[in-house]
Amino acid sequence: MTTRYQAVAVDERGMFDLNLDGAPLPPHHLVVVAEAEEHVEDGVTTLIALPRVVAILDTGVPLDENAPALEALLDAHGWKLTGEGDGYPDEDLHEVTPADPDAAPAAVEYREGRPLAYYLAGRARLDENGSLHDALLVATFTAAQAEGAAHGLDVTGIELLLISAVRAAVDDRLTAEGCDLDTADTACKQRLVVTACDAIGKALDIIRQRETCRTCDGRAVTCTMDGQPVCANSGHYA
Ligand SMILES: [Zn+2]
Image (cartoon, rainbow, N blue to C red; front, side, top):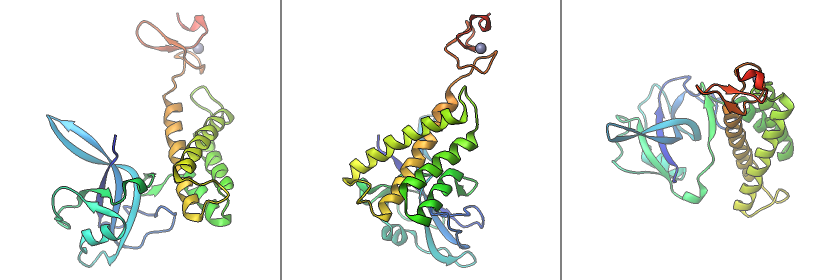
C-alpha cells in the first residue's frame, strides 16, 4: 500500500517546537509534511494527517507577514502538490507526494510539537560523535527506560525486543540503500536513526498490545469465556 502524505500549513507559534534534528524552530510560517491515513465515513474518504512527520519546511517568512506561496517551497524540497490546485493560504491542508517515490523519508513520531524523547536522544548522540552504533544504543535504552517494566516484561526484556527490532530495520534499510555501515555518510546515518526509531515505536506498540492476566501480572496465554485474558496458572482462570 502506498503511503499518503499531507502538507499542513502551521501559522501558530508553539504548535511545532523542534525540527527533526532537535533544533528549535523559528517563529515563521512552517509547512509540516506528515503521513496521512484514509478515513471513510458515510462513503466519503478523507485524509487525516498523523503525528508522523517526514519534513518541516521553514518558509523563512515571519508569522506577522503574509504566508508565502506553497508550491514553490514544496517543489524546492522534493514534494509535489496533488489533486486540486494551490489554494494556500486559504486551505491549510494539501495532499502531497514525494517527487521521487523511492526517496520518501521515514517518519519521525511527534507528540506535543516535538519528536519523541528516544529519537531526540539518539539523534543528539549521532550529531555529537557521528557514531550510529552509539545513537542506536542510546535511543533503545532511553525508550526501554521510559517504558519501564510492563506488559509482562522487565526493562531488560523490553530492551532486548527493541534491539532486535532496531537491528532488523537498520539492516533492511542498509540493503535498500545498497551500502554498509562503514561507507554510510552522515545523511544516510541520520535516515537510519529515523528508521530505527520508527521500528522502536512499532515494537513498543506491539509490546503494549500484549495482554496481561486479569489476576496477576503474568503474560496472558488464553482467555476466559467472556474474553478476559488469563495466564497459564489455572487458578487464575476460575
Ligand atoms: Zn495470572
